[in-house]
Length: 159
Image (cartoon, rainbow, N blue to C red; front, top):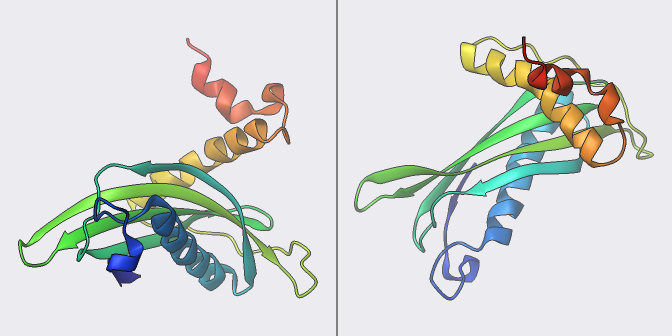
């Protein structure tokens, strides 16, 4: 997804507002989840949105979202954001995040989604880490006991 940063999108420093960036990220991630599942999706969580550099007025913002792993009805989506200053020819990665979406039927009840199959080395790395990130989300939300988070515990078991 590509957007142009206009005056209405900026704060008093002429930088893209963080809330506007999160709005764009949510839309891009939702489109990726909908395309993967061919279902209506709702945002379930947002992890660790990092804001590395300011995005200036007039910049072109490109958001790339991909489903990293699907569980029964939920999908993790990774988003990378780049800002480009066309006159200067500079482009930099400014944001990154993981969103979780749940596919729902017409009544709003969760519905199964197809498996995500990683193909490249980068996709495999994101896929492999998704279960740990999911367990961390569930523990932090109080929906899983830390003692049941086997993938997380394995990170801290030293030989």
